[in-house]
Length: 333
Image 1 (tube, rainbow, N blue to C red):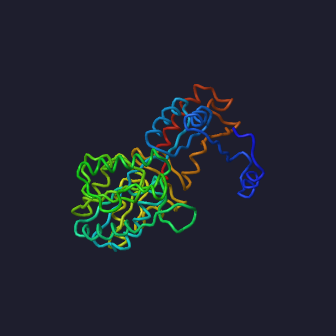
Image 2 (cartoon, rainbow, N blue to C red):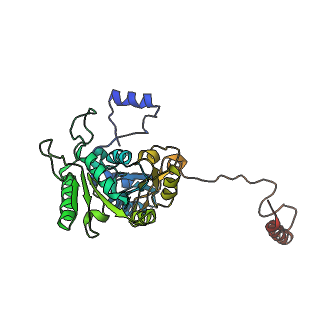
Image 3 (cartoon, one colour):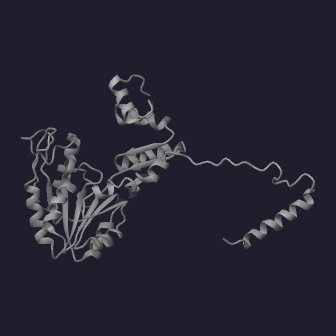
């Protein structure tokens, strides 16, 4: 689909060890470029929203072409009463607000055991308020801007809806035009009611809700009560306790003592989503083999075939074959 490529682009491919036509970039609008790819590809791998993934799956299904997708997430974090709350708050800032929350794996809801809830709210809210916002390509800022006016509007809509229905803003809550046209403060909400949009739906922005739970069993039940199932994070008193809790979560990736990087960077392990968070896998052998199609090429002996030896009549061969085949069920090992 791409016929013109710069010398720099070709050199990059060579240094990466890629054949010339393995990697091609086609810029353009999703409807135009995506539609052309769907009509011509042998396999479609898509990263984006669950709604778009469902539409593409239906289109590609009409052609009976293999399909895989990494889709939306409303990713939960669980914080046990025995966790190091200051350490968790530091990690949670990255887990929630890296790239302004515009990661499929960003945490958007946090469940904290009631015994630790007041203290964690205090510690985490203070850390969120201290987050450094800014633009540029350096490392001086911890969070940048949103990607578009549309996405900023979604954040503001979800925030206004939640606050209008009784949610409290513990940190953030404002647009920051002084920093740039698409900046919004990292925002932490408490007391988010069940009928608020951001209670169940992905925001894909710097808006996070925090909820108290009676114990870890309730935390698991609340975390699993979602159509999404992409990623999760667990912090408990010990790694062993965290692993036990994480193993009960219905997410394709579960991280213990980390926000998302532990599972995401485990390249040998399959990475995928449950529910409406994806189809198929990335990483691991599963992530590579999905791009292939298995087939069988079998060679039959020229002396013996299903019709039997040439010198044995079929009336003799057929019952003998039946009896010998029936004997196979007694074969062990």
